[in-house]
Image (cartoon, rainbow, N blue to C red):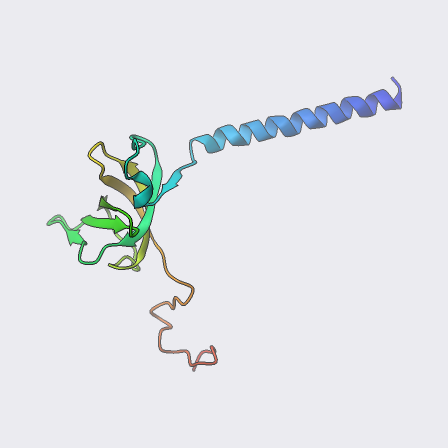
Length: 144
C-alpha cells in the first residue's frame, strides 16, 4: 500500500473518530441540558411540563413562607414582568432571601406553578462571605 493511501485512510479514520466522539457527547448531554426561563418568558406560552428547566429571577418581597414541616418553602419569583409561585422542599442556601436573585431547578406544574428540586442563590460582584465581612478595610487587604 502506498504512503499516500495510508495517510488518506488514517485521516478518514481520525475524522470518523472525532465525529463519533461528538455524537456520543451530544447524546450524553441531551438528558442533562435544561432550559432557562424568566417569569416573563413563561407568561402566555405552553409550559414545558415534565421537563427539567431552570427558573431565574428575584425572590419577591414578603413572599417566603415556610410550612410546619420545616423543610418546605413557598415563595414567588419575579422579573418585573410576571410572577411565578415556587415550592421547594429541602434546605435553602444561606444567600436565599427576599429581594435577592435565585435560580430554581425543577419543573412546571399544569397550574403554572414551579416545583423546585434545587435552589441556587445568586449574589452580586460585591459579595463578601459572612466570615470576612467587616474584616477588610478599603484597600481590600485583610486585617490581622
